[in-house]
Image (cartoon, rainbow, N blue to C red; front, side, top):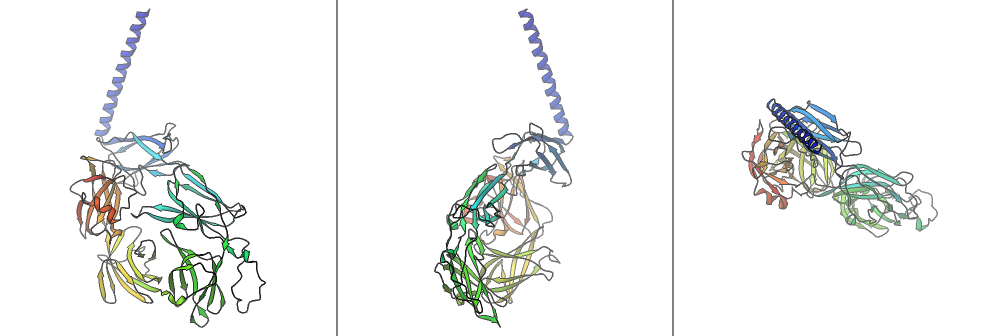
Length: 552
């Protein structure tokens, strides 16, 4: 009996092996047949970046890079699996699910890796990762632990998209009746929080009686208080703000406890600009990588002709004096002494700049073309849409040196010459003097060129590398940088390139680099590929040699 069972078991095993062999051969033949007919499969699994669990009922979409109308969409099964049958080509792959951040395959910022089909590429074992959306909530409470209503909560985010590590304003919310705020959905990153509010009970008696106003009974000086702008965790100085690291799926609860301080009253005297017309002051503060308006705890009030009083918290401010005929700015005023009078004559008178635009090689100006004046620190700037007369008009421009940048929603452009008062200068740097109405002419060139190539390592195309196009003089031409992410076969495409000489480099995991800083990027340029982009490029420019992928 035992021998008989052994014979039966052996026969079953042999039969099973034969079946598996047949199935394998049929699969091989099917795969070769699909490849031979130009048909391939794009398949894989959608998983969470937190724990790697599979995601059922996630929507996966592919788009043909050569034919935007060729779109397919599938829902994943219980095992998170998806599968598409496609022709030979290059495809964008995107995943979406409620409670997760919609993302493309291996996405970094606005870049991702496209899936390339072919016999040399494994497109059937793709791992598409989605990060759970994060939630940041909390309450703003006063010194008694009661909710602060209508407080303005600002969420700031560390940003690398311009090639410089900058902290920029991201979102804002206003607290509800319970003092609550909420920011969702959020993806992973480094954030900062700030809160500004007004004590509901505060009373700010004027320093001197306003002419013609009734006499007000003396107020309790303990009520003449303000809440300073408060940054997480509990500081009034943005330089001491605590960074908040958020990862996918986090649910953070961060409360603020506001502490009132004595208000300071600042006096401004303004010379009349016309009969009974005076310039009024506005306070601004430098915050992270920009300037933020501080409207004070109440609007400036004129207590006598040409005399304004502003109530605010102690600190360093930029004061802008605004009027119908003249505007001025005073930089870095330390307002810490109560009832201090600010000498407005020390301010620099602001200027007006009118820029007329001329397109080289084109008959008309694009409808949505904009021109920007960006200060030397790249922390602030003013942008204007070019009007129907082909002009961009800037009002209240502070004296200084600016980079003139331009572009549109569909194309990039560069300023190659600035003409001012019969003086022409190459480049895009403009010096604005004080108290002037400056008229300039901008000569622009469009970026229509496309640079294509391959990023390789040890002779093999590698996906996911950051590819950077570096201009010849990077410090003076930061707006000419271009980036892309290498696709599954290592290919990349740098678009909207302005004519000029460049170096192309590829860096593995370089997405958090300050790549537009010459001191950072120069060390990579030595192993890059040089290319000259002509003025008229009617077809993509191919790099003759692959770009070597360098470690970060």
